[in-house]
Length: 303
Image 1 (cartoon, rainbow, N blue to C red):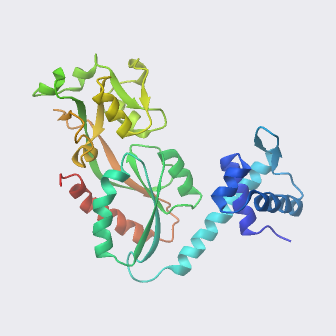
Image 2: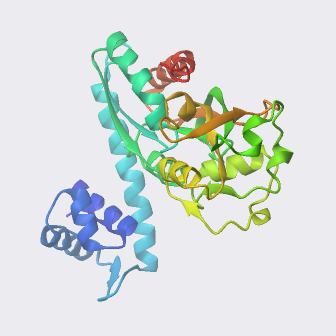
Image 3: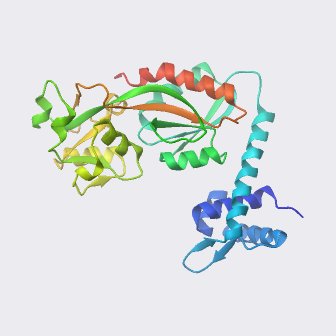
């Protein structure tokens, strides 16, 4: 006997979740079904993949090798399905697109609406997560492409830069920096700068754009989302940097905050799209990237 595709999906899910219940939910099966499938696989291979305790799930040394093989097999299977379902028509079928939280809500509404009109047979499935998780999903074949902020290490993935997204200062209307005609990053040096928590690439991009180091800031508050960050600024806890696309989409509306652009236009991040160079959807992904590149600027304009 040989392991089934379902069993390979089960062990990959458990390896990622480190929890049988969560893995079962991710696979849309009961925990007993998942556990039985993994036990059968271990018997087929005569190898213990996981060490089960009451507190945690550990992957054995041999199990780590098996999980890596399982991920590669599942990626190849996804590629096979993509190849057999492709058609000669451009942007027709399914594309699973990953997007980071500081891009998706502000860029996609405009772009996707235009895509639906231009390519009505295209179905885009979205997955929102932080960059590291999206790149993992991309390399293992769970998504076809990802919209991320650059620079970011992407190894051997294919990349196309779409457009620049300037950073703006967000602060209360009566803040001293709100009235500066020529705002420079040096003006932020003595200010309590609020940032997203570690793991969000926007944090590092904001610091890098201003040539600051995270250690320079002793502000004890870090947020998990831009909306929470803005609420803290509205409560006069500090100031922050927000992407232009978020400002143009109305993130500051009814908050009492204002945005101010920097004199230095290098205070920015770059939005890009990445995908596997081995993907069978190369032409469609290239076309999608060019489409977003063309219409991305429209999403940054105020309605």
